[in-house]
Image (cartoon, rainbow, N blue to C red; front, top):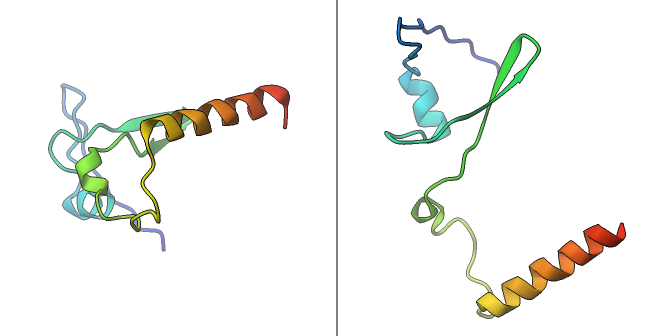
Length: 85
């Protein structure tokens, strides 16, 4: 469903994001917004969120993962990417 909203740009380049949009996107004071300009269009992308807001989104893993395990997975993925696999 597409919904259109209008906002007015202030002399300082500020725009008030309508409350419906802020709620839908989970934007709160201090949220960082990222924008992509593509020709005459602008898209907003999710920015890095506060990790506390993500708590509870995923199920608990069957076993704990250590930082060493994570680093091994990252290194392995980088090698696969580098080798074109």
